Amino acid sequence: LTALAVAEATLARIDADNERLNAFLTVSRDELLAQARALDAKRARGETLGPLAGVPIALKDALCTRGIRTTCASKMLASYVPPYDATVVAKLKAADALLPGKTNMDEFAMGSSNENSAFGPARNPHDPERTPGGSSGGSAVAVASGMTPAALGSDTGGSIRQPAALTGIVGVKPTYGRVSRYGLVAFASSLDQIGPFATDVRSAARVLSVIAGEDGRDMTSLRVPNDDYEAACGQSVRGMRIGVPEEYFAQGLDPEVEASVRAAIARLEADGATIKKVHLAHTKHAVATYYVVATAEASSNLARFDGVRYGLRVSGNVARDSKHAQGGALRAMYGATRDAGFGAEVKRRILLGTFVLSAGYYDAYYLKAQKVRTLIRRDFEAAFADVDAIVCPTSPTPAFRLGEKTSDPLSMYLSDVYTLPASLAGLPAMSVPCAPTKAGLPVGLQIIAPALKETTMFRLASAWE
Ligand code: GLN
Image (cartoon, helix red, strand yellow):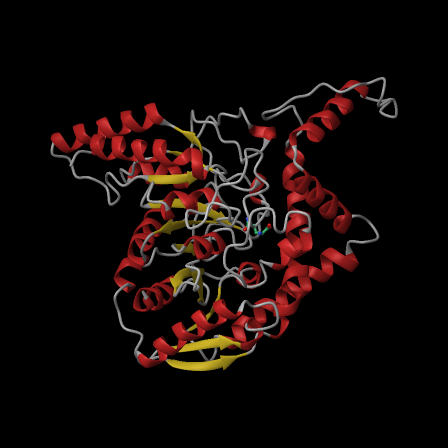
């Protein structure tokens, strides 16, 4: 099998299904074929190939790709072509992976259903009238529909784990700092983390081992050795202590999701793990805390989209905006550009974020949220004194219908309730499929491990699989 044949088969698959599923925003056909030919030539010369040689990997469109447009599913960046590769993209290339293109997402990664994309939502292959989840929905769909065996997403508050759960695949959010964020368009910098999607646990482990590691270009990337995630796969769970947080089986949890997750826990116990109750008492504050911290950081990060430095520029109406007496044309241009370039959810978050950071409200909201964030992290630290890992549902419901929650942002935010705590605590967490609902919709089991214990997480995930 040549890399060229793999690339052509991948393109054929995307051509057949993408119109229906809207997983890819950009298919980089020529670059992919050139990459495949170069790889075949390298093999013909007898050179050693990288650990992902010939494996097609889809990239969330928040990851900068040199020479290939990177839109973040926003009108603001619809024609932005980065002059550099994100560190993870450079690492995939160095590992000889094939990169067929850029996947759909919620605009600037803000959302849980992909419906905030400026280019229309990606659709769930199990039922195209339903959401694949978000924000990394397109990457999840690429893998779940068989277009590519793996993909990269980013997870700020669940955007890898929740789409993995809703489409029936594996999705991994590493420890904060495990993977360089250089070249990931920032949403909430203290939470953003890049990670893999794959059809199986071992493949996800391999992709993580390629993209992880310290990077001088990201000062928050950790100077720690890269553990052997693949070797952790395939070990038994016998003797492992697994915590079950009762706070995660509360009101709002779909009964079929609960039954599936409880059955998974029973099987882990039958396989020799010890199941213990743990308490994560501040879980109920996670949604409020996250939506203060994340919007505050987003309002600051998105200030750079001003019509001067990147992408869209719309000249404003100086006469109409006469309040901008000083620097009138420039200020009018800022306003017009941001008004035209950002969608409704992004604007809502910028407003929320600037509000919680403003004088007079900072102490009441932002500072308070930071304190609660610490309490949430301490809950986990206390729990991990007794257990090796925690298991719980990834999402309170299976995939919901497109349009079901778009008119009610709060109900959309509440769907993140089980993924947000691990994000706020910076912990590694992943979703693996467990038994589907009677209607055949996928359900995800979430595994949360102590900081930097991805190996524990992979051991448990592969044993469950
Ligand atoms: N759904 C969450 C939000 O809308 C998380 C998004 C993410 O992880 N990027 O912010």
